[in-house]
Amino acid sequence: MARPRKIAKQIHVKDIVLIYLDTKRHFLVQVAEKVKFSTDLGTIMLDDIIGKPYGYVGETHLGKNFYCLRPSHADIMFKAKRLTTVVYPKDLGLMILETAIGSGSRVIDIGTGSGVMALVLARLVAPNGMVYTYERRAEFIEIARQNIERAGCMKQVTFHHWDAAEDGFKEKDIDAVFVDVPEPWTVIPAASRVLKGGHHLVSWSPNIEQVKQTVESLEQCHFTRIRVSSLIEQELLVRQHGVRPRERGITHTAYLVRANKVQILNTKSIPIV
Image (cartoon, rainbow, N blue to C red):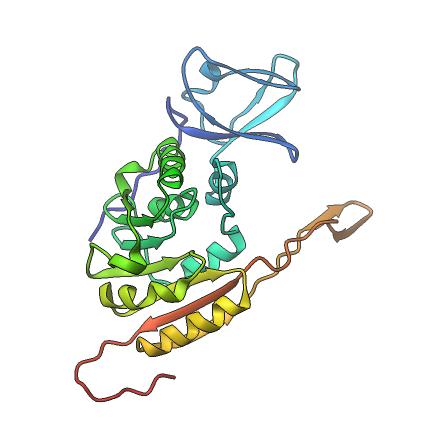
């Protein structure tokens, strides 16, 4: 069994820390010695937070409070450098929960893009798991490498500059497959050959026409328990005199398709439900 990753209680050099001043001012900062971090509410000496516990409250040189917080997966996602549209946290949360991955899992990520999904998956499968991420465009892989290296997750990610639809996958016995490409149905046949029986494939698509073809391909490749959904998130503004929705909510972003692979043991046709 894979060992759980030990989480440090104190802030160390090279840690990624969320410096939070208020709802409009929150920054991901890599801690280093003899470095000043400047904001419009004052300067923070990063030396001063080394060795402090997460949750520490400090003051800028102008006397404004700041909080040293442990960044969430969503914080890491939104602060990453992006060339492509990223999967929203509300969607990625369900995508992950609809699989059985954890520390030690071996996962394929199809469509590296800016590396955000691979980054979050890498944090989940650490320290002994691996994310194998596939991308056709070299410029996307370069940005993804930068984002994943900055987050300290390079040991858990293997990059392939590779067209999975044309050439398949290099790995076998995979615990879960995550798909974020314009034509997800084209990679499902190859994915079905490397995914473990009974395990999960999850696809993210903004267009319903993509979903129809994806479901057809899943059925043809003997997947079962096929489900499709779309999530809506509404954030609330809580004040002493009342509660109301914020002006901007996150409505439809994409359709999530989830399915499980059927392990065929003979040549008889199997009904897919």
